[in-house]
Length: 308
Image (cartoon, rainbow, N blue to C red; front, side, top):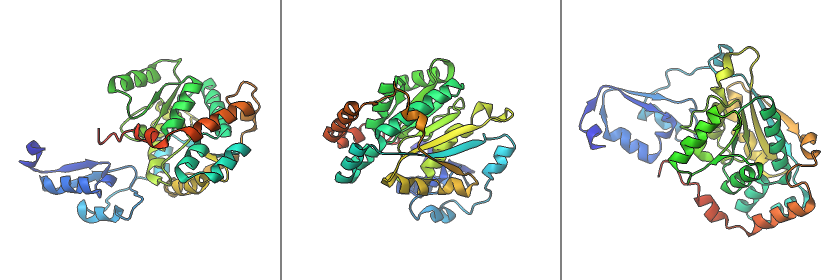
C-alpha cells in the first residue's frame, strides 16, 4: 500500500464501485492521492442507504447501459427466468414452524421437494448440452446436494489449487457439466461456458447478489447464436420466508426489464422413482440430521474471501 500512497495518480479506476461506501474502502479512496476518479459496476445497488454516498465519494453517475439493449445487440445473453415454488413436505414444514430463524433457513433450503426439483433441472439441462451452476449460501446444503448428486463443489475452504482444477474441468471436460458454488462464486469467477443457473439459497433479500449471480450466465459464449437463451432458476420453498426475500431480490432485475415466470411445482421432479429422498424414511433421516447439526460451525466454514 505504501508504494501506492507515495505517488499522486492521474486517474484512479474503481471496479465494483458499489462497495466503496463501506468503511474500509472509504479509507483507501481518501488515502490515495489522485486527480480524477472513475467508478465501474454492473450492479449500482446496495441494501443499506449508502449508495447515494457515491455522489461525493466518486462523483455523479455519467452513464448506465440498458441490459435489454445489450441483450438485443448480442453483448450479453438473452435469459429465461423462472421462480419455482417447491412444496414443503409435511414433516419438514412442521419442523420449520417450530425452529429459530437460522434453522428455518436450512430446512427451507434442504426441503426434499426442492432437492428433487434441483436434481430434475440439472438432468434436464445436462441432457440438452448446458453447463449448469448451482448456487447455495448454505454450506450444509451445498455439500449435501453436491455429494448426493455426485457433482464437484467450491466453497470457502477449497484451496486455490483445487478451485483451479475444478474450474478447468468444468470448462473443458464434457463429462463435468454441473458445478456447485457457495457465495464465493458471486464475484471474480468468470465462467462463460455456463448457460444455466439454479439458485437453491441466497442471502436474504440482496438485489445485488441476485444480479451478480444472473451475470454468471449473461456472459455465455453462445450468446450470439441465433435463438440461444440462458436459463436462471430460483428455487423457493412455498409458504416460507424465502418467498418474501425472493420478491425483494428480483426487484433490481425487474427494473432492468427482466421478468420471472412463476412455476408452482414441477410434477415430473416427484415422479422419477430413482429420485433423491423418495421415501418417507429417507426424508425423516435428513430432517433428523438437520435438527442435530451445529449450524454456527457450518456457516463459519465458508470464510469471507476478502478477509482470507
